[in-house]
Image 1 (cartoon, rainbow, N blue to C red):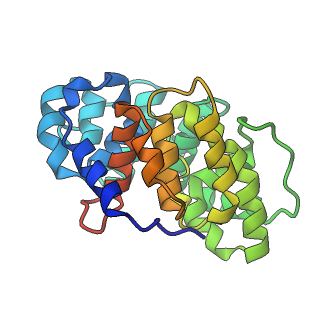
Image 2 (tube, rainbow, N blue to C red):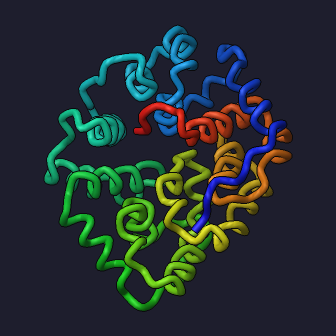
Length: 264
């Protein structure tokens, strides 16, 4: 299991400088649902986000606007996750199951929908536990999602603690291949589970992300934040990023500080 990498003064200074950047100078594609949920923990960003964000869902995720009524799969999952973690009228298990069924196979929303379902359903958590008790791990092409990898990325923080350490290493190494799919969605799917997975088995797949071409804005910053959270060197990586990716990494790393606000 990994723990956040010790922060150098230079690294922390760069994070603080990055978070002080005028947000209107950044490409707006950097303001994704997952990044805004992490930014919600950083009250200093709220005045700028309040002035900049116009999309009702992004405003709600950043904590600067009311939660809107969902109208489709994407908004149903995003609103459901927000309400589930805030304990503010989340969907019931049946509605969450319907959303996961609808999202199955979707490159962007399958994992978040499964995460929502697991957060509101004891039966879905039991299903994830049972999945991880199976003795063999199937072959999956790197970058593709398998139902068992979805189970891990939906509920690893709840189900991995029961695994034997040797099996945990194998599971961690196996699910690491899903990092490419996570990066394409800039989903931060691994984020809640990195303290429970075996960080040593994730070093290589996370390092590969930084060498992968044509990933979307924010994906490389997410990879650097993952390096930090599993205890790998990150300072020089942070300095090499574009302003947008540096912002994503800085938001995630700063959201992990003990003095940050409520994580959603």
